[in-house]
Length: 339
Ligand code: DAH
Image (cartoon, rainbow, N blue to C red; front, side, top):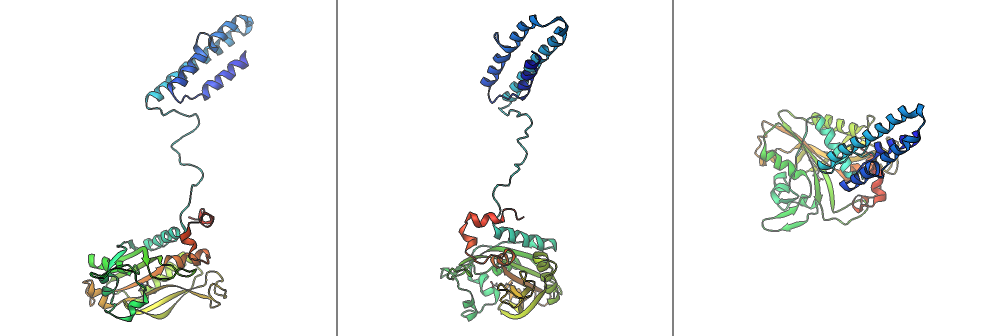
């Protein structure tokens, strides 16, 4: 009999009712005329004299437990059905991670995080741009062949609207809206009329960077990008600059990092040179500052732009750009544990 009472007590403690009907059945099971408690009291007559006191107490304890359980579950159900499941806190976050971030989002977030640590804010601009913000303000002269560097998708001829070919258009918008000091990065999607292959896509992502203030020099540009490269690719990373040309910067450069795969020894990723290119940069051309109503005699600045796909390819050693756009779960799942 003692065992039976103990089992019933466990049952009562773990019981939960999803609705009022279940609670009523529980009440009948224990307290109803033919329920467990009355039948225990009936059997009580046959308990030996020396056990009576103890067993009597246990039956009474069980009865109290049943009554208390009914009161508390009823209260919960009246509150709107939130029942308390013993030992479970339903408000805790789940243990297993569902889904994961896309590798491009992971890298974009990491880039934002690194630059925000040194005071860069994040700004965004429209994907459909006018000619002024995508080209003219950035010192691309009308009919200049430099416009051919970027295979543009045109939306409208007059007024000329394009899908932005780079996020450099956002630096124009930021400078139009604010005066120095300006320190901002602009992540976003860009579009170019290119045939899709393992190495090129017509939609991809860039991060633009802009720093304008008094006395900003190439030294500041180098140090900022050096810091960035070491944070993203590791402490051992080396950088080098090669002279280049962009209409909106003078002087202009492209920046290489020591190959993060072979550490500079030479491999097929760096084509056995030990270096890989990761971005374009330079000192903002005074014409660009003036086009945005910033006094180029008072202020100087640097700018840079990088492709997120390219950085992600290098960081995760992916060899085909198209994988980023196909949403194949077998590919995406490999990044689930990445932060
Ligand atoms: N807009 C350039 C591109 O899409 C990248 C770039 C190069 C941005 C140099 C810059 C820069 O701000 O200074 O290829």
